[in-house]
Image 1 (cartoon, rainbow, N blue to C red):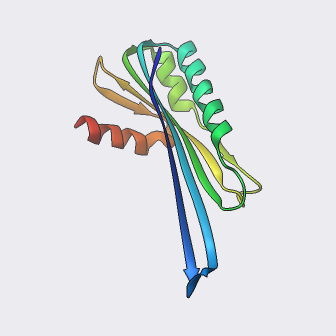
Image 2 (cartoon, one colour):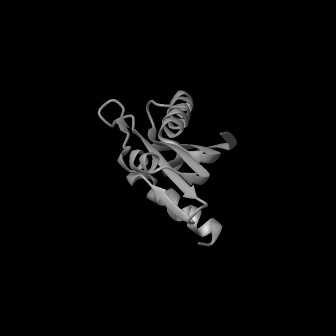
Length: 139
């Protein structure tokens, strides 16, 4: 398995009253994306790479006041994948809140692009990622 690329996105939104000296609220959102190229995605390899992406992304997350959300996204581009890996991906759900959601939340988004049949498979949180991949690859 090869890590094709890793990307980081940080976004900050703010609202002010009258001038920038009176800040009403600040929201920070971030996403950590890991794209893997895998000849054959097995359940074991899926678990290993998913856990690695989550640990790295969670370690980079800036949780605290003003944090709204963090998405850790792992996308697997494979020539073929096992049914067990697909089942594990579909069942995988990780939603973590911080300080009763006052410091936001973290979601794990997962997607597989199977070159053998051209299908894109996602977990529940990964549906927006799957839609984006379809647009980029013009599927």
